[in-house]
Image (tube, rainbow, N blue to C red; front, side, top):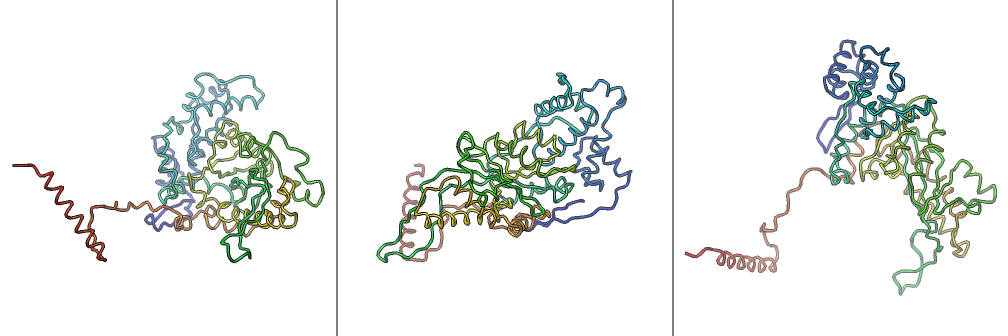
Length: 445
């Protein structure tokens, strides 16, 4: 499937075009264009060949002459190298290129997973790239942080154009996006109440607990939600944190619990979620897409290796754009937190402001999650972000985006027509001061 972006930045439409079957001649011409240095995306558009078809053919035909003799000397099998090359190409298309060192780490891990005690040689990477002419060493050019840290139409348009070819090769049920949310265990909400008329505000008691807890949630393009990973502050999970009765324990049976030093997501927590929750729960023989916010824990060797070995492609959201593109932020987390805090308030009334411990926190969050993470809310977030089906209209029309059009800088010297007498006097006074300055600065003689 081919995608075309039309219109200016204020009105952009993504047109989906289903191309006719490309002829073998066009495919060969596109392959040759890639060998001559053109990118797979540009060659696929120029010759009318689908991105995935061209990528697969380029990788499949990349073996050099004498390939059978060369295979004897290769550490990795041709199939293993092909899978690695294909994943590297896809990650570049998704805006997360794989570094030299990571490719070498992956190659050694592939060998160990195959039962070999060998390691790749010093020049293996150069030879690997040489066996696949479609691969080339490039400089990892980091965009200016000021450009990345703003949800502008330019950034959103570029991100969609980058991700579209790969997203469309993955079935909707295998497209997932994860995000984390943090909650204070005992924090309720401010609301309206009836109190003494002589005061402006009424103070109310709240539970003393202000311990930070992080929850990782994940939803799919087909409106499914995975069980969460709850990250408590601490060293180890304590038995007394969990419910001691079946009624409160039943909703949590598929959940996973972990800890970190401060209750935030650590590198170990992210890897635990990926290996213990995401991979086994969404297991499939086909490719999977995981959309994340680009936290540093998602770029570690272990995290990316796990994705590679499980045929998972990583897609990072643009910096500071989750309020525009993240379905969980758009329609799930807000009602989730509101419902949770309302539950805390109700619990405070019933328990006379008893401290909110882990058990009560889990009870309130489980109920809030049941009410907020629904197919309807997930569908609303999907439509608002338009990640699936891919459509630029909604995210580009939001008022939260920054307009890239440059605004004329204000000129302090610009004289405006006065509307009031004070402005007239101020203008006269300013004019007098300017004339005095001109007299002082005027050269004598």
